[in-house]
Length: 332
Ligand code: ADP
Ligand code: MG
Image (cartoon, rainbow, N blue to C red; front, top):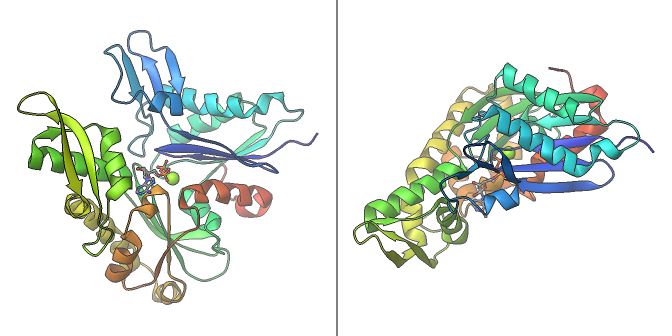
């Protein structure tokens, strides 16, 4: 049996694993639940995510990559190893090559730790790739031609904006505002306006369920539950899409400014290509209602949401695995 090469999207919110010949075999939240005193791992992935905000004092549900940097080194390693093991790398006859996309801002020490973790999990060779590159390839862009391609990947902890040409990043920026900050903004808004505490899962449900970033976007309402700051008791209120739009305004503006700054630094010939081809949005944040239209208005270029935006990076790793000799220049 031949080794099955593996591609991994090690995201701040979700980890996806692609196995050559099989497709995406794992898609789990980047969450680990541990016992505070003993550091014992109790659950990883979806099981751990269900515990967020619901754990007793001695158990914590941690997102080790939360802000796009490795907040908790050991736990990030444990999580990666757990997921690779679950895919069953060790049981195969020959060892696979693994291509990993990690958040753009991690340090070289962290890159080394990721590579070692993959090696210890049974990889023959490990390659690390830049995330915007995999996102663009997974979204179907041909980044190897001498022409400009712009991708904006909006994940949980970071938004990565990049212009690529001839297989490499020409201009890029990583902004620390993405899905998590949208959730935080909703939490703060509801606290200020209604004196109601809500959990982070509730904030995310609101964003996905009724959120929009444009006044002309969808109009819906949702009943939400939280804890009244004054009485301390549970309380249900109704909130509307318009309110979510107001809550998200600042965070979305930061992303718009970041994308503009990248375009301003892009050589004119490549900008011209971007006007023709449009900007592609990837990552879970690309699904936020109205974001494509808002960005298109602000950047004055066409903006398209990739097909299946949350799978672009992992699909990109799968495509890159087929051309490893050609596409991977850097080995860490
Ligand atoms: P990462 O690559 O950092 O792991 P993902 O690309 O998996 O992140 O995206 C996760 C983010 O996308 C989360 O903040 C999640 O709330 C958000 N998200 C997922 N679906 C939607 C949706 N339909 N609308 C808005 N945001 C969404
Ligand atoms: Mg991502």
